[in-house]
Image (cartoon, rainbow, N blue to C red; front, side, top):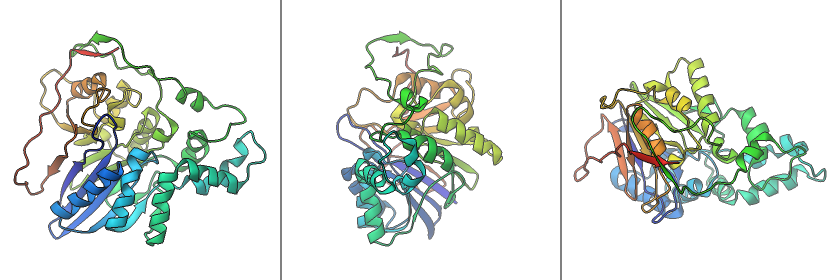
Length: 356
């Protein structure tokens, strides 16, 4: 069995997003999985890519990691244009009855809260509606679920429903503002200064701040294809990644054995920390140690915000090779046929200056 993981470019300027196609198995018996679809335009690119390079109109699994528009919008094109076996996505509006009593407004009903959630997540609800119309089976990806050869490591259903979902943007006011919401509402200020960083001097912090609750709800997937281990992270934050490592350990899985890892949230420094990377990549290595882990990060062609150099350095410092889309499709493969005209990508270099 072989595997190939391809990151399709999202955005033509400074807007980021994720669109990933995975194919694994043996010739004549491949499985195809799409993980997030980026924008409508990248959804079209996914369809064309699968038809041209995989010579099929069938996708076994479509996974939406979380309902941000830069991850979900293109998936509507995928399920409209291709035949899909299963759709995996969270259905937050169906959990309204479990959380309505958490909010200050006592007039909220199950139905009104459900409708409010649908309106605030209209792209995800549109995907859900189209899948229902096409009679595509829909499943929620919570910890423990299996999607083909991939295991869902996060989120745990209780954490998602009772802690993350109530703090999604546009939700009603809580009876008591949660610590999550306080953390997630911290204003983001643009980087104005740079500081020196060396191989032995890491400035990535444990306490820089938290990513949003919708990002923390991202599906984290672990796959073991004939001994080749893969970790896909969506926009998961530090807590979700620690939870994933905990659950993996309970299953007897060491995430540091993964040979391919997606850098979460386009290389944002709010999503990772030294302790997280020590658990999913490994501890720091000696400079110029040969690379054992391949990492991809999805960034738009012209963005200057991502990936953060402090994050890139932290991955490289732990023996990872970091490659970015930057407007191009990039492919990582193991025991899969080579492609005529495709060339090796140049990984990012260690930076002597990082964002302060």
